[in-house]
Amino acid sequence: MFKKPLIGRYLSYHRHSDPNPLVVKFREVFYRVVGHPYLLDAVRASRVLPNLELKSNATVLDVGCGWAVWSLAIMIEGARVVALDLPNEDFWEACKSARINKIPIDFVLGDGQRLPFREESFNIVMGLDVFEHIPDDVKTVKEIKRVLARGGSLIGTVPTSEGVRFLLRGREKNRMTKDDLELGHQRRYDSSMVKRLAKDAGMRLEKLGYYNQFFSEFAEEVREILRRFKVPDYLLFPFLFPLAKIDFVIVPEHVRGTGCYFKMSKV
Image 1 (cartoon, one colour):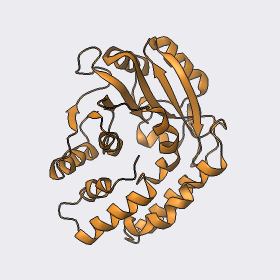
Image 2: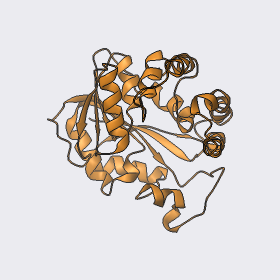
Image 3: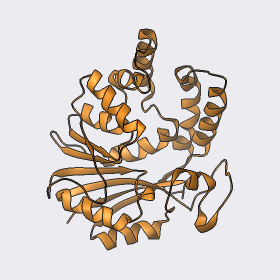
């Protein structure tokens, strides 16, 4: 799904006002070949995307969209997409790039705990690595249920406390890491917490699986080191992306991992 040249053009304007045309072309070709442009999403995308089950003219809400690359991928497949987030740098950069490239994504400022939409407005809601940031995740899922059409689905991902990280930077209280605290995470999840979240929000849990990020975390660490020497990302990715994909090849989704994905439906 992510193998589209438009993503290369879209991301070329992320934190750049006038990207080099040769770099833009390189990204178009590269993302057409490898897919998702974020190393830590190499496995997550492979787990999540098949569960979207997109139909023509579906309406999709991307809660906590960030730089909206997921919104873009869904829009390319023919869905009408609304990308929602609180004000942040990635959100504004996504708005800018969409405007420059004439991409028909509707960007909305809003809070997942108080969605500014009518009831039954969407067929699918995505909340990818969002719920761990939200103080009241049950309230948020209830809000998502309100705006979902009957039979609609919530596709989400959350970090877990069940998997072993390849590079662990230290544990804090409540199974949190220093990275979690720096990123503003409220919690890490386990399978029982996800099941309880669905039950408390009145949703049906359809599927729960895991993704591991042993090699993708290592690839991301290498990327961060090389970026200090001003090595451009578009030169790093051809070498690091295959490394990040190893997790998907060798670790099945039932193995408890560093993150989990779930599908909930409104009944």
